[in-house]
Image 1 (tube, rainbow, N blue to C red):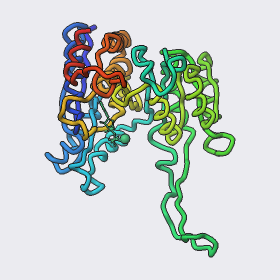
Image 2 (spheres, protein in one colour):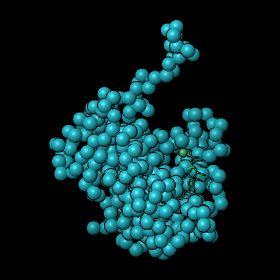
Image 3 (tube, rainbow, N blue to C red):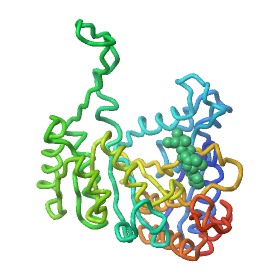
Image 4 (cartoon, rainbow, N blue to C red):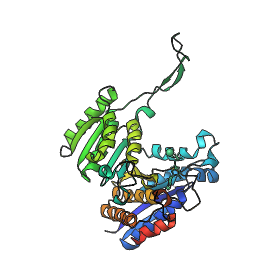
Amino acid sequence: MSDSYSLLILPGDGIGPEVMAEVVKIVDWFGANRGMSFDVSHDLVGGSAYDRHGVPLADETMARAQAVDAVLLGAVGGPKYDDLDFSVKPERGLLRLRKEMDLFANLRPAQCFDALADFSSLKREVVAGLDILIVRELTSGVYFGEPRGIHADDNGDNEGGRVGINTQRYTSGEIRRVARAAFELAMRRGNKVCSMEKANVMESGILWREEVQWVHDNEYPDVELSHMYADNGAMQLVRNPRQFDVIVTDNLFGDILSDAAAMLTGSLGMLPSASLGAPMANGRPKALYEPVHGSAPDIAGQGKANPIACILSFAMALRYSFDQGEAAAELERAVERVLADGVRTADLMGPEGGTPVSTSQMGDRIVAA
Ligand code: ATP
Ligand code: MG
């Protein structure tokens, strides 16, 4: 069977186009050397889309994103757009993609490449060999729940006279679908899921725990499941992160825990992500892949950006959208080998110094490896 995959590339702003140029080299390599055929199209998102269309994501781009197997995004935003009205801010382009594609499962791996184990914020003994995956619910929870708002609250005994309200609200269906995603992922990895909530103090936490357990018992009884209070989870992530394989958690806890886990392994320039939705007609999930880092205006246009986060995001696309797990592992091994050879972009230079390579040199080295 000849494999053909449609890929929409949205480089965006700042260092987005610089790092994406390196991904394109990798895509071309897999096309030329591994018999994959990619149907690649490019479009605008964020400030660059605003400059052209007056909106951070054109309707045509949205429609194309809905139709492809995978969207690969660089980064959006920058100081040039800081004063724009909220409704057309670059970040709104990304939010529209996530919302309309209904990308409810956000995957953030934290993987420690051996060559960078001493670069981590923790000791080598704690992080060497680390390979965990945090699955964060992305479309519900306290960031979206109603009622919300800031209101007058003048009961005579409230200094300042106001109250701020957010509502944590999860339906069983929302919990089950993200739990399923986590169990499916675990089956392709270490077969272990740890679910994190605060069932000791939150009703939504009790429901979360019950529904994750339900999905386990009824659909994935062979995957090992444990439950942990999220505060303990934060502590365990720093104390002994290698005890985890897949962690599944809600939007708020996932936001915090995935940032903490990210820093276990080093630079922002190394961190990929995927956001997955429901399966499409062809069985592949709606999917958007992007580096965790932003547009890094401080280094944009200087050839200093580390393209690895974006390249590893493409590895996730190979694995999760195109079912090319071996190709994904091959790409990850190439990154590992280049790092082991001591090749470093500026963000990966330790205090001992050395000469960093440029964005495109790093891309070329990975292609060569
Ligand atoms: P956003 O709001 O878009 O997340 P931010 O300012 O929070 O933006 P980044 O744009 O990711 O975060 O930049 C944070 C810091 O990390 C900056 O100093 C930036 O130069 C650095 N940085 C981010 N990505 C990379 C990369 N790929 N290579 C090297 N340095 C990077
Ligand atoms: Mg940021």
